[in-house]
Image (cartoon, rainbow, N blue to C red):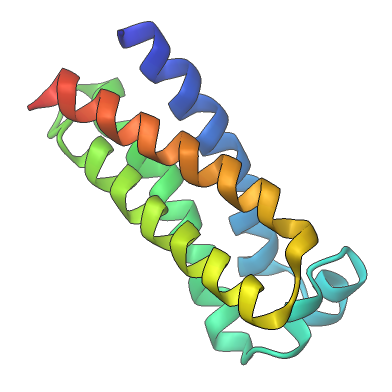
Length: 123
């Protein structure tokens, strides 16, 4: 079960680090050009905040269990990422952006699995 956690959490962390770094550090025009069209319609502060939350969630999945300090934070980070994805699904549905929903649902499922495995392993 530990191996399963690390595989799911590692893939999830990589996805969120990449997506979060883009939102946190790239210019809005560059985000829109790269396919994140909503970034042009949302205040820049909100885009940056989402990016930072995604980066912190990715770190929270990996760092606590890796160093053995407060590993309960890992499944809590997964729960936070579940909430991010639920918000993303609702947001994209309201905007009629159904082509991005499969990726949101995959990330949501992975975060649920990482959270469940983390709670089993570290509670």
